[in-house]
Length: 490
Image 1 (tube, rainbow, N blue to C red):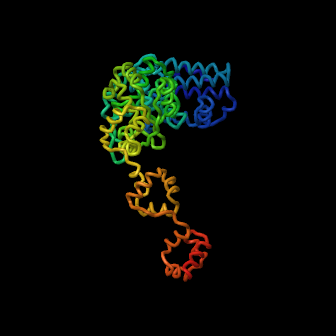
Image 2: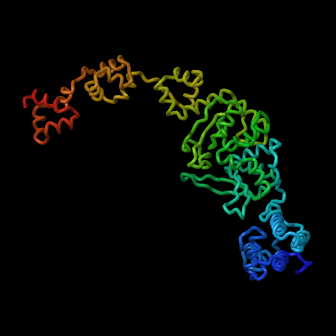
């Protein structure tokens, strides 16, 4: 058994393991060095079989892209190795464990885990900033992450990245600087890029960094579940912490100058509606209806919803944290909320014009449960200057031409035509007078006679078709056609 008193480097430790593990494990005694490295990688370190082989290459091979002659194991890797050795070999593992302890003692700067790069690249980062959301500043920035941030661990479970990122419009770069200063990042690391959507360029700024403790804290707060469409884990209440969190989300996904918040997360909007007892409805919107600023953020595979917050809640949100996004800071009035609610329901000037033509402003105001003046103001704002269409004009729009109405009356009669068109008897009568229509309901034979036109036409048709074939063609029974045949003495 080799008692090495100089287990200082990673290469020393690996050599110790290669020499001492076979001494306490008979199954490994006669293996080649390659096979021994593979077995120790799997059995002791819980890694893939090439784990130690790759590390040796990093240490020895200067042509390796990851060359690092000073490579060190992390504390987490050493802990796993010690636990496995102790469990597998018991008291006989004393020397092996002692060498690992020596390695740890000599190398006091070991990372807690393998990819712990944040201390090197972001030495002032407040890694546990989101451990506890106990201030308005922390809840605000967590809310902002819920809107415009993301966490990424990668697809390889053995090489997690623990990446945190935020990407927003370039015009809000100063706000991303605020985030960096809040969590201890260097604002000089903010990057810029351009994303193209529908042939339009969107200039963006972003910050990307890795930090396992912060990643795990954000994950524990439920960001991943929130992004997947679940409610916030945070217990929303009537207090500043809750208002600040909602303000962070509003600054990412709220309408500038308005009360509306957009989200693909229906459960979250319902959570707000229920907690704060807001009466407005959550409405589904098409992505194409959104502003250009929001379009590039929304995945077209997901439905988008909008919800109008009440002004009282919005004002409390604004008061909760004064370092929020400057361009969205505003005091909200009840009148603005009512106007936003109507816009939310009607959606566009074209729809407003259509419903005013159908119902008139007075009836429409009652249907929307708003004052006539409020609806009138919206009409002015949207430049909609129309009046209710008369019943006769609506009927004209339905039937389109005089000939169409004549055909309907001759086919179905006056009463049935009125029912099918969903109009009153007087409306139908007024249009008949205006268009000077004197026609009445025709029997099937009279309609058939009108369609065929004359005895000569029928004679010509019978040269190429039988009575049965003609009857089918004109949608009548054979007897109806036979009676017309007899009437015209053919």
